[in-house]
Image 1 (cartoon, one colour):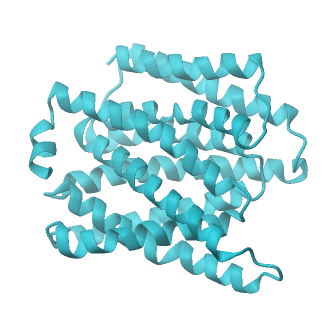
Image 2 (spheres, one colour):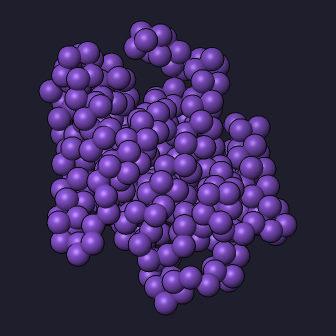
Length: 301
């Protein structure tokens, strides 16, 4: 599998596979976000998810993939720190604002800074048509957030703080997108990076915070449904995050980041179907803008 992936680098087939992985990741990431924002405390949900994918990754990291090269340890350390900051800010935002307001702001901020980061780190350049597509996509994403902000009625007293946290979270999304792309490209075997990333990222930070919060709760939730949700989320995370990181090795980081942000469309639909959040004609138009922006970016590349 590793040899096949490496053979696709720089080819049209590799680019097409990367776009498919990014689109799949968009759908799965929206589901993942809804799981974290669902009926359980977001800190507990994220802890259960992380420990699940960390445990799943252990046998692959230790016994299946090649051992990481010495230069990879510093990369893993920096990646770990960036993801810890991201997950902390995201949980803070989700605990203070409505999912359909917070999520679009997070995802809308991410690709813009990822494109800028990819320019400085990898020398990637967007054409004028692609920048126009980014503008259309961001108009849809931020328009969706503004619309939701105007009409949301739950938790308005903490919503402004949630939006600030959402912007900061989006900036960390761009940081991990570009740096993870650097990390998987620095590893000889892409699956070595993925296995060790999930093991290190999953076992230590959020499970510890979740355990502390769980023990401090007066009426903690039942562990079995929480861990079942965590297991489902962990499997989704491996496919979603693994797919998007792999895509950044096969194609331009900026294009992958933009296509993934169609997750905002899926998130709005999930908020409507699963979380009973209303979707009207104006929001449908804004979601269409997001999809159109992603198409323009792909056509202009």
